Amino acid sequence: MRHDMPAVSHTIGRLARLPLRAIPKSTVVPILSGPGKGLRWTVAAGQHSCWLGTYESLFARVMAKLVRPGMLAFDVGAYSGYFTLILSRLVGETGRVISFEPGQRSNDLRRHIELNHLSNVEVVEAAVSDRSGTAFFNDIDSQGHLSQKGRPVDVVRLDDYPVPDFVKMDIEGAEVSALEGAGQILSAQRTIWLVAFHGVPAKLGVIKLLANSGLAIEWIRYAELLARPVKDVVPGEFIE
Image 1 (cartoon, rainbow, N blue to C red):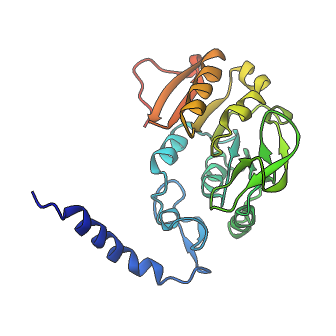
Image 2 (image 1 turned 60 degrees about the horizontal axis):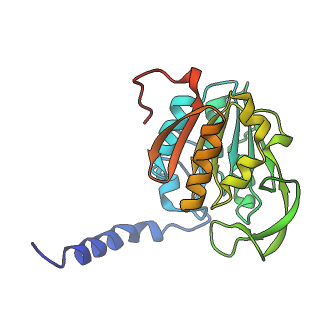
């Protein structure tokens, strides 16, 4: 076995990405594949895999299988809006998407909504937690998260909004607090949750809150799970 194979693979990967780096960051392109195919995207917003249509493809496939026209969907941690665009298409003209994003990427989110002429999306420029008010948000890096220091942002509870049919959540470690602020939604047992969690404490807390609410939990990947009302789960069905 050649011991230099990892280095060779890394070099090939870097060379393959060189043409992508030559694309001006201000360029607007159509998403090339996946559930968001054809929607417009700015190259500078996030990774190249977004406009290639391969970004978090498993998450996207799960959404496409479960989200239906007319649903109310929440995108909690919307960032630049990749999943917001997909959810907007899936819920259709009769549905609605509420996207929560306090970070610097909220400008990209609004830009993508404008570029695609979406009329069924509402942006809430706030972090989601177990209370309403203000908190510090650290978005020095590309993701951003609630922190002990940073810039002040608005904070909201999901229970302050109508009970959704579907929630996608990816908020860099604040998942437990967000779920604790959604007790009424959880008790309604009608919402589908697609959650990415960050760290072991978040994992354990998320599982406990969702399971104690009577939801059936299915693993998508190690750090991602799907929770659904038991009545909606078909025995032997595997979501992928």
